[in-house]
Picture 1: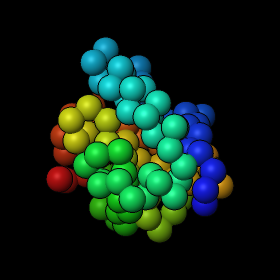
Picture 2: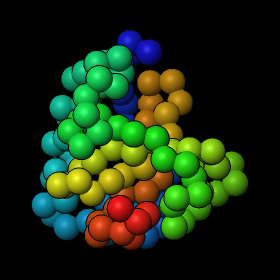
Picture 3: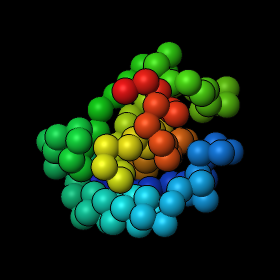
Picture 4: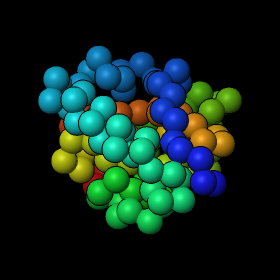
Length: 110
């Protein structure tokens, strides 16, 4: 739990990737992750969810679903530009991003 978070984009779902984001959103996504990467997971969980921290949401709250092999009961949600979320799951020190929201309420109702 004390390792540093590593970002994996391999499982990004079609229509939910960085290519759909504005330049400002892409920049903020990377800038915030750079800050997160300098923290340990233990330090990161102490941050507020609308800061560098995260929260867990049940899979039923999402308007989209993951491929069967990536299904989880709940997903970890971080924020990028403003409070726009990106969601996925943690495996070891790696956070696998599935969806990056580009407009409020696309991924789930806020």
